[in-house]
Image (cartoon, rainbow, N blue to C red; front, top):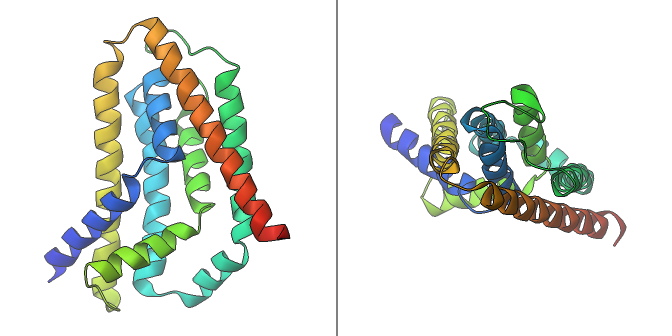
Length: 207
């Protein structure tokens, strides 16, 4: 039973992390520009945030869910502003030369930025509730919920490790022009996600 819950949690964490979104795009861009370490640090920030949301869903923390629902508009606004700034920064800067140096925000900044952006999307906890319901997980006890949450982290972290590893493996085969094009495209996608988050925040706060 604990092992089964661990696997179910891992599959849930993997499923929530895998769909293409701003964090995936940002992780890919940072891996291409700054290397495996910074890309993985970005992914792990999102993995920790996913784990917290998974814990809220697994333990059924109603007060936290109510808080997230109440402040959803503000959280979306925060996430949107961060994404717009990151997108604009990428669009108006050149990717550094592929010489092995770590540029930009650094490891701690990479972790913190994706953690903050993921936390700014309270809909993630609803995604976990839906996934848990789909795979038949009811209201687990304290021990079972803990195993489930550990699985969520392992699954989410596995996705980010794999994504960073694959992108890092191919980055040296790309020309400088190709890296520049990917950098610009990813920055534009991040900017678009940020604008969408700001529009959603406006709808929640003022409509």
